[in-house]
Image 1 (cartoon, one colour):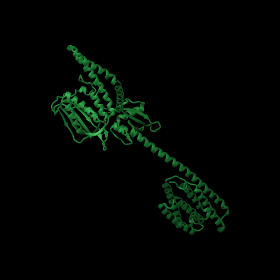
Image 2: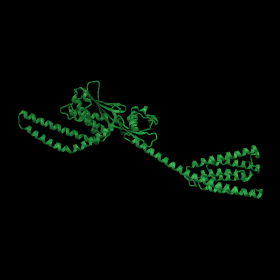
Image 3: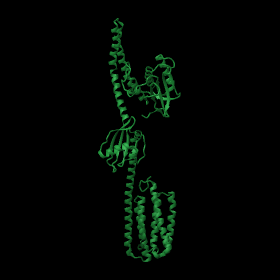
Image 4: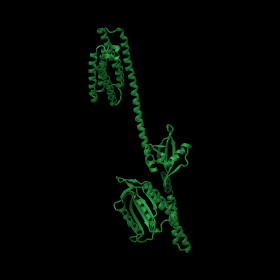
Length: 534
C-alpha cells in the first residue's frame, strides 16, 4: 500500500509512528498544564499572559487527547491526520510562545521537534510545507507583538534565524527519511532474497540423494537433511553438539579440521550400511564451519549394478542370435548323428555334446532374463489368490502328488509386483526347494505373514539346508552346486525382486531345511508401492 507521499511502506509503520508522536505531544502539553497550574509564571511560562497560556494549554491538551480517537479508527486517512496534528502544533505552540513573551521565550523552538517528526513520519516533501507554515506563524506572531505590544524590532533577526532552522530541520528530516526508506526497502528485498535462498537450499537438501550435515567450527549441527537422518538413524535439532549425537562422525570431523584429511573415507554406520565421507569447508563463515556429505555406498553400488545390467542387456541382445544359431545347428547335427547306428561310446559322446549345448542355451536364456527387470509393470493384486493359481500350475507341471506343496496364506493381503516377474521368481525358488527337498507331503511350504507392516512370503523346504560357508554366495551370478545348473537362477530372482521394490534373502531356520524370504514393499493409501527401508 502506497501513501500519497510516494513511500512504499506497510501502513502499520505510518500509524505506529504517528501514535508515538501523538503520545509525545500529550506528554509535552500535559507538562505545560502541570507546570503552569503548580508554579504559575515563576518558570517564565506564560510570563506575558498566564491566563492565555494556561487556557491555550488546556485546549491544546483536549485536542491532543481527542486526536487519539481517529488514530484508533485510522480514519480519516494518514496524511490528513498528520497535517491536523502538525497544524495543531504550529497554532498551539505559536500561541504559547506569544503568551510567554515571544521569541525570547524559546517556546517556538519546540516546533523543531514537530517538524523533524513530521519529516521522519511522512517520508515526503510535505515537511517543507509544514516548515513554511511554521515560519509564517512565527513572523506573524512577532509582527503582532511589535505592532501591539512594543516588541523589539531587532528580534526579527532571531525570528529569521528560527525560520531558517525550521527549513533546515525539515529538509534534514526529509533527507534522513529518504535514506531510511531506501535502507528499509533494501533490507526488505534482501530479506526476501534470503528467505527464497533458504527455501531453495532446504528443497535442494531435502531432495539430495546424499546425506548432508552443516556444522559450525565448534561442532554444532546447524542443518541436517532427511537422507542424513536415515543414514545415521537419528534426527537432531539445530544447535545439537555433533560430539554427543554422532561421536564417530565427530572424530573424523575433528581430525579433518586438524590435518585436512580423514583416517578413512568409508564410514561404517550400521550392519551392511556404509557411507563415503566428504568435508567441504565454509570459507566465508567466521566460525569456520563445514558441510559434511554422506554418500550412501549401497546406492552407489546399486547404480553401478544398474549400469552393469544395462550393458549386459545390450550385450546379450547383440550376441543372442550369434550364440544360439550355432548352438541350434550343433544340437540338430548331434540329434541326426544319434539317429545313426553306432557303438555305445559314440552315442555317449554325442549325448555329452547335446547336453552341453542345451546347458549353454539355458545360460543364454537366463542371461537374457536380466533385461526384463528394467521392464517391470507392477500392479496391485491379492497375493493369496495368485499363489493358489501358481500352486495348481506348479503341481501340474512338475507332476506332484497333492499336498507336496502347502500354502499357508492370509486372505485379502495385497502386494504390488509384476505378475510375470513374481511367477518367475517363485518358479525358480520352488524348483530349487523341490530339488533339495524330500518330495513328501508338506515338503514345500509357501507361508505368508506380516512383519513391521511389510508382507512377507517364505518359501521353505525340508531338505538339508544351505551350508554356512555357501550362504554368502547364494545370490552371486554363476554360483551353483548342481552340475546341471547355470548359477543364474537365484541371482535373476533377486534382481527381479529389487526391480519391483522388494527384496529376496536367505533366512536360517531352526528346523531342517532352507528358507528364502521375499519382503514386499509397503503400499500407501492410494495403493501405490512405498518401497522398503534398505
